[in-house]
Image (tube, rainbow, N blue to C red):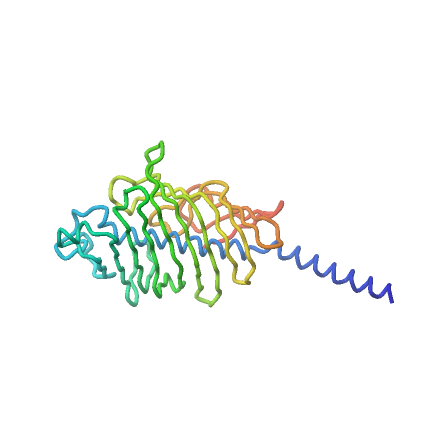
Length: 279
């Protein structure tokens, strides 16, 4: 009987070991993390493109509308409006960006639903915050939910603007119904395009950490080892190195490349490397 029990236990051990070895080769967590990462970075980039009026009020007409935007999609509503002296200086100030049933942006992505952003003060004032909340919001049929908050930290020694950035209660549902949860705490530095009031040429350097669960409900933690580089108009991370550790599995190192705008990344697990495509 003892021998049978021993053989049974050994079989379970071998099966568990083989399963874990197989899981250590999977890149699902890496791919799902990238989906969530990009979803919440593009949320801010899309917001910047349509809410730049608060940084450059010369383009505001008497109704509070950004007159430089020719297209009627999306529609934008400021509360309070800019067309009175009281409204102009009053905070908090909220913008509602409504993409309706679909607007195709400069990046070629189709957005649906609403983004609501609330400023507590002028954005270049230290400790002013911007809170961004999507409402029934989709990007190319990826559903995005959560709260993203920016707190302005001022300029660093290089003269670049910096923010403390947190994502809470983040959720992305893919077109095939997979659910990815994601939260992060990071610092963003605007390394290009900071003083020309043109959000389309902004480049951000991002450091910090994140956590969440992949589509299989496996928890993971992520730490940026080399700053991630995000460029306005590019749908993916262009450069940087990130370590991701799924629960009970080996740490994966993700290299996003040399700065080119593409959807390629290399995942290294132990002594094996795998090429993957980002969302």
